[in-house]
Structure formats: C-alpha cells, structure tokens
Amino acid sequence: MNSLLIINNGFKRCFDKASTFIDAQKTSDIDKEVSDLIAKIIPQELTAYLNDDKYIVYGSVGKGMATKTPWVAILDKEITTSTREGVYIVFLFSSDYKHVYLTLNQGTTVPGQFGPRLGKKEVTNNSKSIRALLNINNAALKSDGKADIADERYKVGAVYYTLWDVNDDEAGYKLLGLYLDIYKKYKEIILNKNKDVHKSKKNLHEYKMNTLISRKYIHYVTAIKSKPFLLLAGISGTGKSRIVRELARACWDEGSEEYKAQKPKNFEMVQVKPNWHDSSELIGYVSRVSGSPVFVAGDFLKFVAKAWENPDVPYFLCLDEMNLAPVEQYFAEYLSVVESRKCDENGVVTTDPILKKCDEQWFFDLTAQLTTDEDIRAQFNKDGIAIPQNLIVVGTVNMDETTFSFSRKVLDRAMTIEMNEVNLYGGLENRYEQIGKLEAGNLIGTAVEGVDIYNDNKDVCDKALKYLEAVNVQLEGTPFKVAYRTRNEFLLYVVNNLPYNKDKDGNELDENFVIARALDEITSMKILSRIEGDETKIGNLLDKLTTTITEQLKAVSGKDYSAKKDEAEKEYSVSLAKLKEMQERQKSGYTSFWS
Image (tube, rainbow, N blue to C red):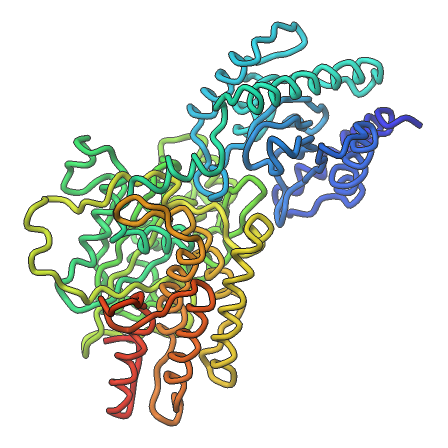
C-alpha cells in the first residue's frame, strides 16, 4: 500500500472518530488510535513519502491538554525545527474534525523566547509579505483567511491553504508536490537572497528584547516572565507599589494617553485589609439578601475579566501591603490555580478556573456583568473563569510587628525581589521611571516548566542544573532543599535572561556571564528567601552556601564574585551580599531573608 493511501485512510479514520476531539476539549483524553495516527503513523508515512532527511515531520493532538486544531507538520530543518516559529507546511484539521487542510503556515510565537504570541495584525502582515515575495498565482491556493480552522492563529497564519481530498490519491500527489515546490522556492529566497521575511533568532532578540529596557529593571521583567507572581519586599517608602504602576505604564507608547494617565488601564491596586480571612473581598461572594442569589464580584475578578479582553497587553494587579492579612487564607484560590498553569505546543498558557462554572442564573448574570465581549463570556460560561496569560500579580511586602510572615507555600509559588536600596537623588529629574518600552514579549511568558524550554536551550539549562545541584547538596537534610518547582523557575529565569546580553555601552556580554548573573539573582529570589531559623536549625548552612555559590558562579563565568559593590576585579553578587547580611543577623540567635 502506498504512503499517500495510508495517510488518507488515516485521516478518514480520524474523521470517523471526530467526537473524540470534541470530548477532549473537556476531558483532555484523546482516543489512542486517533492519537497514534496523528502523532506517529501519518508522520511516519509522510517521512517515507518525502524520503529526504532535510525534512522533519511530526504531528500533535496537544501536550497535556487537547489542542483545538490537531496537526501534522513538515519542516525544513534549514528554515525551522519548531512549529512555534518560521514557515512550514502543515496539515490542519477543520473545526468539525471531518476535513483537513494542507497549508503553508507560520509560527506565531516570538522565536527563541517562548515570548508573546505575535498579534493577529502582525501575523496577517507576515502572510501578505511572504505571498508578495513568492508571487505565485494558482487557483488551487487560497489566501482569504476563511479556512474552517478552530485555532485563529493557524487561520490567519496561513500563507496559502487548500482543502485536502482524502478520496483522491492522485490529486494528493500533485497538491503536496505543489506545496513542496513553493516551500523550496521560499527557502531559496530567504537563504540565497537573504530576504528578511521572518526575523532570525538573534535579530529578533535584539529588536524585541535587548535595546529597549534599562538594566535597572531587567530582573523585574525576567522574574515576571518566568512566573507572573512577584513579591516586592523592603522597608516602607522605597517605591514598591510605584514600580508596579510604572511597569504597567511602560507597556504603552511614551506620550500616549495611557502612558500619561494617573492610573493606566492595565494597572489596578488593591489595598489588603487586616481583617481578610477569605477571598470574598478579592474574588467575590454569592449574596442572597434580595432573595435570589446574586454574585458580588470583587476587584480581583473584575480585573481578571479586563485582562481577558486585552490579551496582548500585560495587566498588573498590585496587592498593596499584601501580608497585612494571612495570604494563605484570602488568596488561597490563586495560590492553587497559579500552579495549574500548563503550556501547549503553541505557547498558550491555561489554568484551572479560579471561579468554577456553575449552571445557575447568578453565574450567567455575573459573566454578563464582567464582560461585553460575547466570545469571552461564552468561554466563561463554558469553562469557568480562569487566569489569563497576561495577568501579573505583584504583592508589596513590609515585615514588622503589624504584618504576617509568609509560609513556605507562598514563597515557593512567588518570585521575591528585595527593594531596600535608597538613592535620595532618584526620581528628581524625571516624572516617570525611565524603563523603556515594554513589549508583551518582555513580560508575558509562554513557557511554564523546564520541559517547555530544555530541548531548545540544553547547554544553558545543563549549566544551570549543575549549579543548582551543587547548591542543593548544601541544603540536603534541611527543610530548605529545593525540588521541581524551583528547578523549573531556575531554568525559565536563566533562559529568559539570555536576550539581555549587552552592557551599558551596548557591548555584547559573554553568554556565560549572563547565565551566572541570572543564577545569582534567582538564588536570592528562590532559595535564600526561604531560609529562616535559629542556630539549631541553620547551623553553618550560610557559610557553606557562601562557599558553594562563590565557587559555582566562578565555574560558570570564570569570574570572581564579591558581596561588596565596586570591589576591584570582582563582580558584585546579590546572593552573596544577602548571605552576608543573614550571617550578621544570625549572631543575634535568629536569621531570615527578611529585613
């Protein structure tokens, strides 16, 4: 039996079981026969048919959860090796899963950064540019964006598309040959004539990431992209809540109405009250005062809905004085849901609902109150209200006799940055923080776990893992030993720092130095922030960590590190400086990260 006949029979069998795709949108369970056909058998037959090792062929029904649009892709390794980026040929199932399209398509995630999904307008413009470059007129090739494909990104990303006829093998040979010829022409243009149709990984890094942000703010930005839950700790009056507002402001073009606004629309501040012991003030509650149940929405839930309406803009929720009340009590739902985040093969991050669907009138009234966007309301009514990918939660923290300390549950789920340094000359010359324009890709992460980035960044990740293993040896036998969650966040933070590889004069930094700098920062954020106790609990742990971190940072970058700023021929280490501070505090009998 020839390969195209097997492929067409495979597609037909998938059409016969179309209901498994529909059911999987709720259960994530795809029929094994269908999954094997799309992910194994059809790619194997296509590979045999192509008989050319320059092509990679693979298919997917979704990783972790079912994709709305199953696919089988053909990638030329000289153009791209990932469906996240570049141009490739891909078979796409229709929205009813009873037809399949052959398309020349494009990745819609910023290359190399697992950063923002490219906007619809940008993807559409890319498609037009590629068509103009190819300059092909063929009635079989459609480009009107009207393919019946559920995933909007594939629909607008299609340079050309054609409905595939599973009952005509001869037509299939001709159509696939046509698309392969077009793909070869595209490759010849971009490689031989150096046409910049889609940006190379390096150039896109520089355009999107490197040139726009002040070094002073990079650790905020990369921490948020790695985990959109940030704690800002420090003495009162250091501008913790202000920096959140300024990060939100920096998402807008300088001089625009939102940039100049007192409160940009992508920023919301909620003042935490000492008497909060559940989520009713933040999320809301069902009231029956009027007889019929009515949901009274809290500020958090209202802001979540706004973020859903503007998915390409980072939305910042600032919980001011976050630890005036027990965080584990009033923020319990978020602490749980933020750990349910999963990333699909296209970089779309989803979570469990923070407010579950309820088939009662009060819930449908609530969704109508929260949004006027019918698509979003339909999503809420179908799946409940989840956390959008662009929502960033930042809590400001003071540690004194009026506040609650953080449990390890909270610290394990957040990135922690300390803001104790004070420059009395700061903020006197400019009304706003000089951050630079923040693009969505600087802040919205599309990777959640180490597995999402490891294969594309193996050498870098292995260096980070070797460092973390050495640190974890010193934490063995203590309650501070780290596990997979912290491992994932280490890897994400290091990889997200790679584009910021220029010094203040614009000179490129050695990659190993950038890796070591990121490891130093994330060590303070995720490891030292969890350490506290008296002499019996801590012992000489801080001394051992100081030695290990000093040695491991040098092993990565080849440079010496110091706890002091401006020490000759040594790089300043934020984690060594914090360890020194904690060692001094330990002399009183008790120590912690928190001042």
